[in-house]
Length: 126
Image 1 (spheres, rainbow, N blue to C red):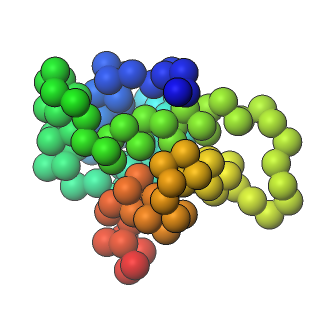
Image 2 (image 1 turned 90 degrees about the vertical axis):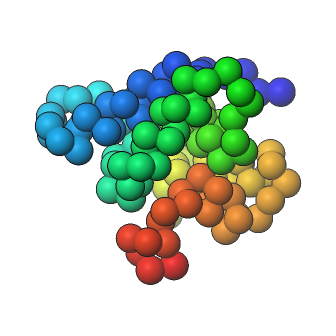
Image 3 (image 1 turned 180 degrees about the vertical axis):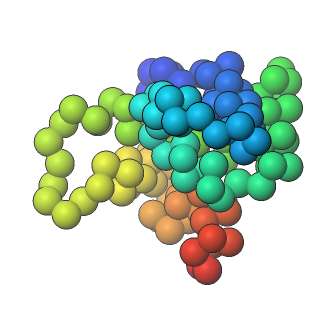
């Protein structure tokens, strides 16, 4: 079992910050969020406000997380733990983390991408 370095409280804080940034953009807050949660700015672009609010409520509750929120937390962990490692030419850290997560979950990369980035198709036309 992987070591958890991104917990519920941290994820809830991330989504609260994303929601706040929708109404009050702040460059330093954006930079800090991106450093702590690689890929968070993509969520800022893609997630509707209602989804951000739903995730906050779920993370604040004591119930088990939906698979996509658990996968998102693990995705952030993989990005953070692999940040200092040399990478293959032409591959982005997010692709590497997604491939690792897909293997951990026993899913294909496309299915894992849809789990971690459920709203990507809206912005990109997938």
